Image (cartoon, rainbow, N blue to C red):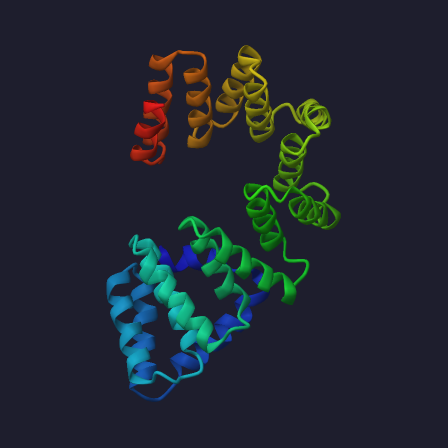
Length: 281
């Protein structure tokens, strides 16, 4: 259900506050409270179109209601479910206009901005979260990832190392730091690091896939193929691994095999347009 999916993405530390705010909304003795109450019931039954209409009506009925930031968050998440990214962004921004210090709402907007390709605004939102909560793991990981994409490897390294001080076994930070090393003039160190991780965790599909990509960049195609095929064997429902192997097959001039992997990736949820573009290279 949409409601249960939404609750699962919330940090446990904020669930009590969220539930308390919702309790206050639901017990408002007026038309606003009735609209919110009906909207929450609609969410429970996955009637997201009806929930959307009811929440919009509630906001319109009392536009200055303090708790509207929660409704804007719901509306943003509903619009994301519907593929209406710009509308979702507008909702998150309206919510932050009412409560600029709400971390979870800002994280929602940051993640959406990143998916929309607006890395600079996403970076600003993640940095704002970290000014308020310097040890927020997800914000650190995403900011490091964006820094790396912008080739600001020094800043990316600082964020990844911060995560690893907080969570030494965080796989995303381990891999991120290795890739930063690989792209910033420390390729031998990076390869030694990923070899060590694969040696310690040979059944870890992510580490296999990362090493496969690194070997591919070094044009060690047969070794890369072994690792990527192992990653797929260990995690056969991960579309990204099929995409990675497809790009390797293209480098190896094996277009038929590349096409087979893109078709499997599409079956597992990859974007058909992106896969068609890949095969045109």
